Amino acid sequence: MTTRHLDLGCGPVPRNPYHCDEVHAVDLALPAGVDTSRFAQANLSLEPIPHPDSSFDSVSAFDFLEHVPRVLATADGRGTRFPFIELMDEIHRVLKPAGRFFALTPAYPNEEAFQDPTHVNILTDGTWKYFCGEPPQARMYGFSGNFEMRRNERALYPEAFEPTVPLGWRREMRRRRLLKTGRLTHLMWEFVCRKPVAG
Image (tube, rainbow, N blue to C red):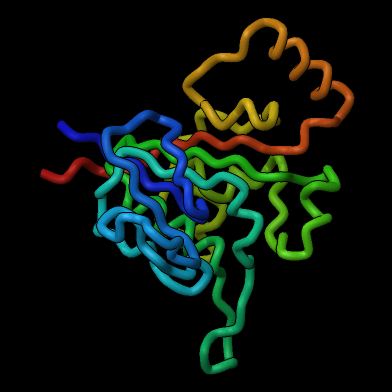
C-alpha cells in the first residue's frame, strides 16, 4: 500500500520526515515548475487544507506554525475565529487513524521565536495540552480533534528534520548541554492522530 505524506508551508521543497512513498505539499504560493497534482496552493490561516478526510499517513510543519495567527476577526467583523485551532483540526481531519503529525517551531523563551516580525503564534512547552488528552483543552475554543502526544521536547536544530533518525552520542551530548543552558531554540512535536478507523 502506498504511503502519503503532506508537508505544510514548505516553500518549493517539501520535506518527507517519515520517508513515505508520495510527498504532497501546501503553501501560500505555488512555486514555478512544481507538480500541481502534488502541490496545492492555500492560505492555511484562512482556508482548509485542500485534501479529503483521512488521506495522509503523516503531516509535517517545519518552521510554519509560528506564522499561523491565533485570533482573527470574522469576515463580518462581529466575531473572532481561531486560525491555529482550526489548522490543528484540519491536520487531524486529513490524517488517517494513527497517522503522525510532526512539527518543529521556534518556541518561547528563545529570541528566535520573537525576532521575525511574521511570527505571531509563539508556542511553549505546555501548548501541546490544548490538542492532546482527555479532553484536549482547546475543546473550549471549538477544537474537535484529538491527538496522543508522543514527543514534546526541545530539539537540536536542524538535526530534528529527520525524526526517525536517532542522534549519535556526540550530538545527543551536545543537545543535553544546550538544553541545560536554555539554548535549544526549537520545540519538536510528534503527535499521533486519535480517531476511529472507518468501517
